[in-house]
Every structure is written in C-alpha cells, then in structure tokens.
Length: 327
Image (tube, rainbow, N blue to C red; front, top):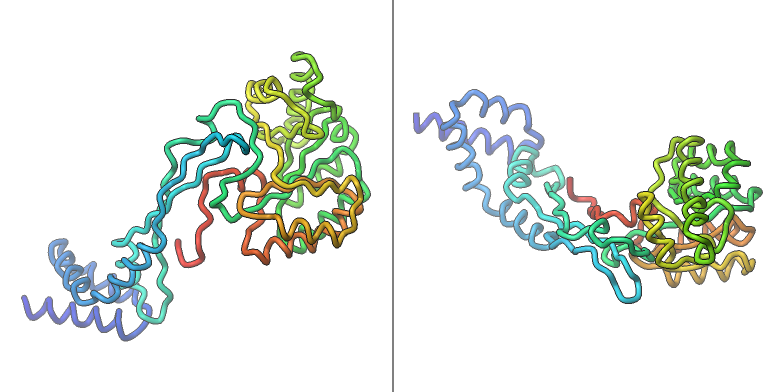
C-alpha cells in the first residue's frame, strides 16, 4: 500500500510540476482514493513543494492589508472606509498545485470590511473617497447644456468610463429621452434638486420638496433608486444634509472643481485636472464647451497617473481595488 501511495504521489507531482495544466488527471487520481488517503496524498504533495508555498506566503505578505474605518475628518467631513485584503494562502497554494508551472500564480483573496462604515457616521457631507483607493469620479451636474451631452457621452464610451450625472428635476421633466440616453450608456443618475435653488436659503418644507420631488421623478421616469444628493452650486447647510438623510440620501460635493462654467481653455482644464486628481477625488463638471473639448484629455491624464475612473457609488464604496493577479 505504501509503495502504491508513493507511486500515486509521484505521478501526481509529475503531472503537476512537469506537464502543465492538470485539473482533470489529478482530480481523478484523488477522487479514486479514500478520504484519509486523499489527505495523505495532499500532505505529501504539499511537503514536496516548499518553494511554491514560500512564494505564495511572500506574495501574501506584500498584499495583505488591514481595513480602514470610515471617519469624520475636520476638513473633508465624512470619508469612506476601505476594505482590507487577506490572501488565503492554503487555497492559493492548492489552486497553484493543480494548475501547473506554466500558469501564472493567481492569489485567492477575501476582502475584510471595516468596522465603521459611512452609514455609521450619521448625516455628514462627503467631499472625497478614501485616499487609499486609486479611483476617481466625474460628477456631471446637468441643468442645461444639452448640446454638449451626446458628444461627452460618446467620449466616455470611447474611453470606457462611467460617470455620475446629477440631474436637476425640472431638466429631467423636460428631457426624459436625453436622460434615458445617458442611462442607456450605463452611467449613474442621481439627484440635483428640482429647480436648482440655493438650498441653505429655503424653508425646511421647501428644501424637502426640492429633493423629494426629484427623487420621485428619478424613480417614476427612469426606475432609478436614488442614493446621492448634490446640492446646486454647492450651497447647503446642516439642515440640508439632515433632510437628504431623512429621505435616504447622502449629500455629496466635490474634491476638485473644473469651474467649467467660466469657459476656461480646454488645455488649461486638462492640465489642472491631470495635475490635481488623486486617489478618491470627486471632480465637478457640467456639459459645457470647455469640458466637452477637454474631457478626453482629462480622462487620459487621470489614467496616466494609474488611477481608475468609476461612478460616485464605486468611488465612495469600501470595495477594494484589486490587483490583476488576484481572484
């Protein structure tokens, strides 16, 4: 029996180490064994490939990271948390054994949620994502500028980028077909009040109506479950944030402003955004001539810094951006 088992171990190792991919043959060999024999074979296989295990362990040591709790910052207010990362050394090792030497090492990982999330921070404005997350969002506020929207959508398609469009409710009421086109292209649609007022100047009843009316319209017109509220002109007070929270929305502003309504030159806009964008940056823009002409250059400048572009929901989530070698 001992000789038989050793032969199986050697044959399995030969397939694993010398002949490339071996899921089928090795699994068949192991399946033919009794449970206790299978365990013995695995133990012997593992003992015979210490170098592979050391490689997995060294990669795990580089990638493992503790989760970061969401917190209220003195300047940035509510800052999202960021999931931790833990490599499952045993699962990675077994997977590598069955794959063979010709295949790249794929690390099996699990994300570890932080103990404190954005939801635990109460009604706080949000100006940025977690600074450890290499992702940026384009926040496009829409109350006018229809002529630039489709050209901007075409560029976003070409660059394979999804943005978040905050829609003024009165604009949405008049431009449902254009809003549907934005939605069809896969972008996120959110709340920019109804008549573009300065929220801090309104009574509680009027402020509530401004947000609630657009939230209802997003649902009825586009079947959107609204999550985020962007105050028009960035004007708000704590009551605004409290009202939005009572309606199930988080108030989001921006980290970096294009100030595109002043019609800066496209070149200066590309230079500004490319230089200042960083991990967690929320970039405010509008459908203007400047942003339309600068959009491609801005996107490429951001990507050149090794940053991903995602929606506001993606950037503000705690989900970790994973390296390509993990599963």
